[in-house]
Image (cartoon, rainbow, N blue to C red; front, top):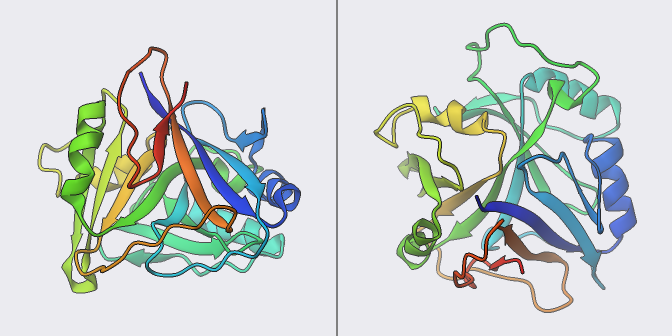
Length: 250
């Protein structure tokens, strides 16, 4: 089965980025310049930029998210390492979240496996970030869902969850290469949300902002998002999705 394989970001200091993600976030060297947690999760690659990264609310690329069994533990570990991280908070009925940035300003979200107050006993390794982090989400902003969703579904991605946040002006849509079915057939159901964050493969999250007039992507050589590659055991023969800068490897 295909999978989201590699997320490439262009940065001023690739070596410092790699050190942060490995030493602080617990990722490891996967070879060929890739770092990550391994398994079916996406890896990260950092390429050289010639100027610093400046995020805007119209950027195509928003963030990655790390899901953890124990968000309070993760925040304490990050604070001990000198990372400025927000206090965990329950955001609507979306998730129990916290946020921080890497050394070059790329946003990273922490998501607990359970909503606040709903966590049962967990079996985790306290030596690992949050008891065992995994790269759960890669998130993009889009203005036109219909311009990209048919391609994702044609590729064989399954839609796992839909989370309307109309008071905030957007709707979240989640897709993955998986044969798993969400626990509830109604994709808007709250029960599908923490289930999605617990998956041990990387899920594509689209923040659909209908009022977004333009979606910004970095120029060649500019710091920021470069692209995502999809890996597949077979020659899938699918077209790339240039709107999201997602390309099939090989």
